[in-house]
Image (cartoon, rainbow, N blue to C red; front, side, top):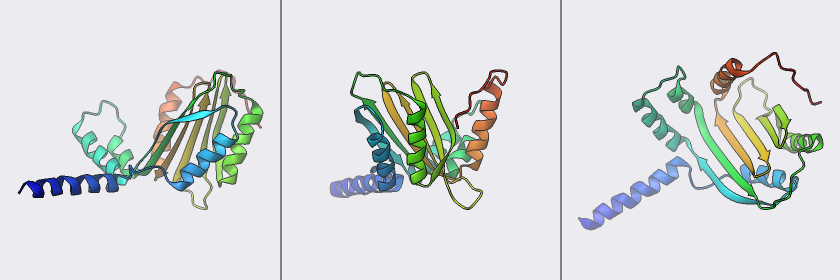
Length: 189
C-alpha cells in the first residue's frame, strides 16, 4: 500500500512536469538567445530560463477562474489562447556601460529578420533598448512574438506562442489610455 502511494505521487509529478512544458526552453529560443548575446556588448550570465507549456497555462486558467477579477480584461480567455511562453533573464556581469546606439538597435532588428521575424516596436530610451518582433507568416493571425529588452543590468527575452490577436488588442487598448499623444515621437528608419 505504501509503495502504491509513492508510485502514484511519482507518476503524478512526472505527468505534471511533462504536461506543463517546464523542462526547458526549446532549440529555437536558444538560437535566438545565442544570436542576440553574440551581437551585444557585455558579458551576460543566465539568471533564469524557463518554458511554460499549455498544461500549466490551463492550470493557471483554472486558478484565475476562482479569483476575483477587478478589471474588465478576460484573463482566463487570454490564457486559453496561449500555447507556450518562454522567458530568459540574463544579468550583465560587467560593470562597464553598454552603449545603446541606433546601430545596436538596427543590428538587433537584422538578427531577428534573419530568424524570419519583423519588428513592430523598436525603441531606445536613455539606457534601455527594447524590440517587439512578430514571426513573418502568410496569414493575418499573430501566432508568435518575441520581446527583447536590454538595460545596463540585464537582458530579457520573452517568446509567446498562441493566438495572440486578442492579447495584442487588449494591450493596445490599455496603452491607448496611458499614452500622451501630445508629446513628440521620434522615428527611427
